[in-house]
Length: 210
Image (cartoon, rainbow, N blue to C red; front, top):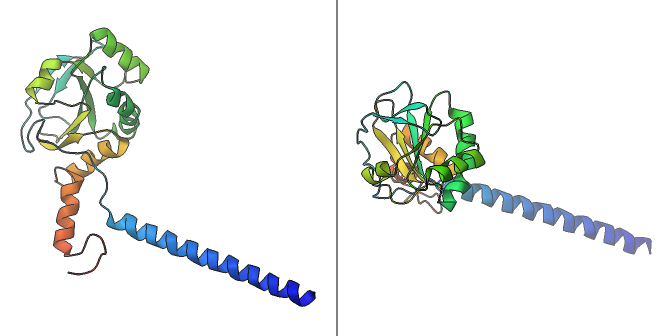
């Protein structure tokens, strides 16, 4: 009887050790896959102003009555968000925008341009998502002028007012990717990763030299 118990004990420990080893292998493979996959960034489309285009300064007044200058040269780069009170996706990304503003507001200026909805709807939108601290301008004509067809859409301008990155933004990662792409002097993170893969001559799926 004691022999059977002893065999069972060692068999159980063997199974546990095998499970631990299998778990470690899976974790390692997930880590390698994560490193090889490109980060998800804002999806750039042909809409919006062109990369390298200078956005001239435009004086406006936000919903709180504050004077706002959109575009042009400034002390800091600017993240310009085109949104709409009637857009469900805009409501989904609003909390992420506020979180990014709280983190980056000392080095980046933020402004929101609403391209749809009534003034009352937009005021409700600002209050609902606590966006009072971010300049919020209601200007559908601006959306038409800049060819923004599908909000939420982000445009990142450098401190001279030049478009450095742009794209449809549906999450915090999309918003952050515009900042990262601009710092790398690329229109999107996808173009940066594509160039890095090409320069390193690596297979993007297996990480082996071609």
